[in-house]
Length: 473
Image (cartoon, rainbow, N blue to C red; front, side, top):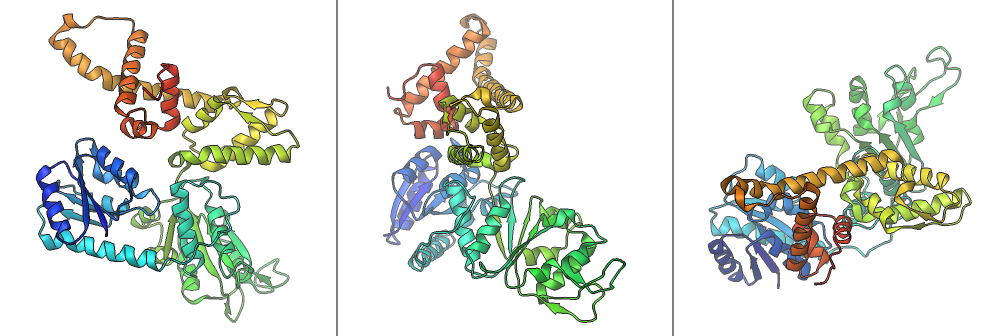
């Protein structure tokens, strides 16, 4: 029997949903808040979640990833009476199955449910046996990485053009290579084209090749990169840098797999699979007239977005250990240990340069601390430590501002009731009361406390240590 979860703060709506969905023969659980809904999802799996937007403890649209970033995640149907100009667009971008506005007829409310359950039944019934992916260099087992690897597997089993997007340093080329290595073209070449280094005067010669005597210095025929990728994969790195004037010519190559080398009389063919990557917003470039819309459609038959490292904090420890071991081996030094504070610092850092920055940082540390057995925060570069401390100050200031807001109102109405103490003492006392109450209300459950406070696990542990608050009351 399918299990449905309804998250809505309106008791009447919850009751109506239960009556309608139970009449269809499904099991229904209804929760009045986002926190209680997430607790229900942690306790058992559900097939579909009906999610309101304006909840007392959060926004449903922004909370969709908290529901979908889990194994065999349920389908999410936004069911709201609030009117948002871009609500449906945001819901779909965040992975929702459908967006329904209240009041809704029984048919408009239940048809998406029927289709979502039909989809899940077919999806899990016909899922092929799990095969270990070749994922050289892709470190981490977070839910976000697992979702990307699922798409890599799908892309590898097809021959469709694939667009990989993500910030600089997220490892887009590693995922492109994983697609190639797990495909039927794995024995063929993997040819990289760095579009950012192509000049308009040389791009045709580099991509298409040239005939002997095509221009001064062309003493012999030269194969272009497109021909070199025959029977393999052509990887266009930083495709957003491809000159606009050459995009039309390349579009024809994608459509027909035919091209004419510079100075040649006859066309040539190349049987290649295309994977492209960019850190730019190609849709915005299309709107600005800097990128062809028809080329974008061709490139992203499949689309894989690689999340930044700050959104996959649970992978940082594994990444740090992997590269620590790799660089210790490279420089022939003994393996090192980590202090808890060192790992806390890595987790608290926001990694603007993503995985590439972490790799460079670990090499820097190993080179500088070759003969020191344990790594501490002092081994981090000064600019990293300063950025971490700046982030802590901003976090503390934001938290203090939130705590002070009601106190200021009370002080204005009854100034004699508040005893003024030194600011640092007030801050410490306020933090202590907050985190003590947090752990009591969470029943000592760290995961629940993180959800309630919207803090990362490492940050929460740090505050508990500072104020000597036990996790179990």
